[in-house]
Image (cartoon, rainbow, N blue to C red):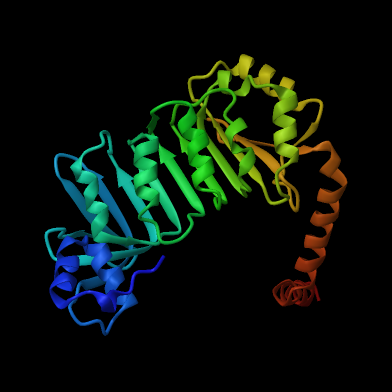
Length: 304
């Protein structure tokens, strides 16, 4: 139930400002810009992408293609807005350093975790500070508190369209918690032979349930047993999938990258005809493009 701020005496309004975090003060300021008693105004600076590093002290850096990397002074009485990418590094323990998030208005499109220990408490605390849903989530060299954390992440970030697990430990039933998500891309890096040794029927059921734009990208571990890996890949894909060297068009597919720069693509047998139609339609569109027509006329003129 909304509370009528106008009913607060002036002294209580000042006290409300004192007790509020920087981000809460800024939100109050936006909600009631002419409300007397919330002065001085909370300063605000919009940033695109930031990197928060939790080392001995918390360090914040702004990254920009034009301006490069520049440090952000977190001791200033400024609230910073993040609306592109949020990168979080080296979160290991739950402590007071996480209160730094009170200094940000977080509305990023993607979050990248690097060398973090991921717990349900940390994810819960972080999501409370997010202003809008996340569509892109990356975990690089992270550890997880327990197996159920992955399920919790999937339940919290329901709007995800892209998920990456890069050099992270995970079980061979890695796809089970992902059923609730409508992903366009799932990327797994440093996948071992054990990770491929999954229940084939369960995997095929999961893959068939994904939308038509879905791509599963798997980068194999460099120190794998090649023969054993090939045997398990054949067992997983031979009945329901077809191998192709070309990147499929217009259908969901699996892309497997190995250390000799080869890429193996697999599409469902049920999608072969649709993929052929989509490829032919793309060829027709290219042939009709003004640029291709100009090239054809140029070649014809040279032949004459």
